[in-house]
Length: 287
Ligand code: MN
Ligand code: MN
Image (tube, rainbow, N blue to C red):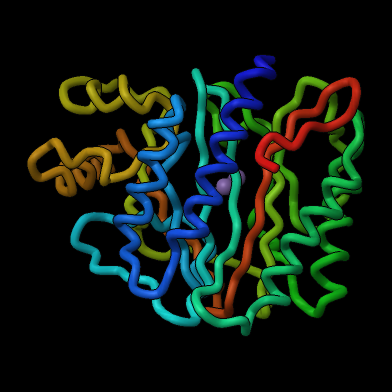
């Protein structure tokens, strides 16, 4: 457990999130916002743990802009900014929801930030996951919304963004304990819909499928990104990179993450922090 590296990655993640919150404004380009946030992470001495996700309205997660997508934030958009930094593979993962120019969804957004606070209060060394999940579920439901049932928080390990455990946003009875030495992300998602997301089209985020042999251009990419997700944007130095990535996906070398959107296109909000459990209690690295 490299606590110092987790804490430093968390601090940079928090600062990058705050920068992002300022940049998301009516008329701003998704592409430029993502690039500026990732540049900040690099300039701070960390690397992005995964591409900046900018997922809007009914899209819950996994959209990262690509050159030429012509996306600009519009008045009234509900934008989930989800980002991560890593130092030597030790990851922070954090998210907020920004409503552009309006205030229609403040209560929905607040239900996720309050749920995250309630989850944080519920944490102690050895707490069962179901206790944390129940705190999240109650906080969201008491405001008249639904948690997203099929999106969860998750364990973190070196170069491993979704390690081992899941932390659901409702009490599913999981009795696994959060014990000293564990790092994890908690990410309450809420919606005014029924609370299920489904896969949409590809969101320009890729990852190497483990245990596949990589060579040539894919070998070069694997050296850079290892087992962490990466953006199509990060491959722009290769001519025809979109076709290259599509081909890698077809050949089973790469996984192309689909965007996740609310089934009936209801609005989704999210708030997320990274935690490290110690003998003395929990540390919120991204707070
Ligand atoms: Mn995240
Ligand atoms: Mn996460």
